[in-house]
Length: 126
Picture 1 (cartoon, rainbow, N blue to C red):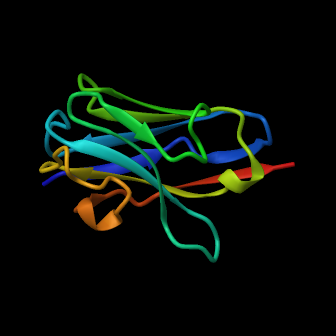
Picture 2: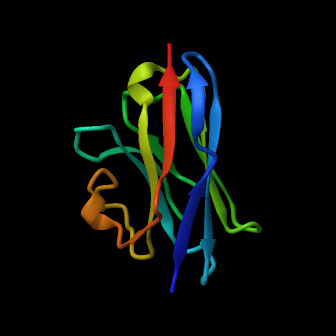
Picture 3: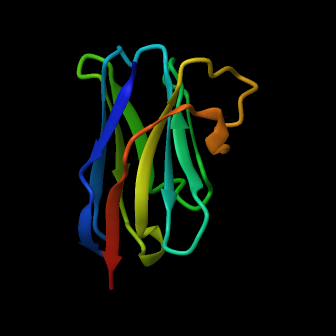
């Protein structure tokens, strides 16, 4: 069974950068689409972006041009590079995986992804 573990969160000043990692165990990540979600205090979980099994990516407009998702299948890891961080990027970041993702799937819906990590906290300060 696939298990996911996020790491790399922390406290960073506005304008800074962080790289989050999502390490998979139990199964190879190769056939999975991976999405990143985040949840700010008091708000609903929202999609940040995703990468398909063939490395197609898409991002929410709020992070487009600042965030980038990549994957290293040899390390069974997906990364979320976050640059030019803003206060509103603060939240708990989760990675999620779906082995059955297809072109018609909506990566913005948490219900599409059956496998989730425990989350890592990102705090952006002024």
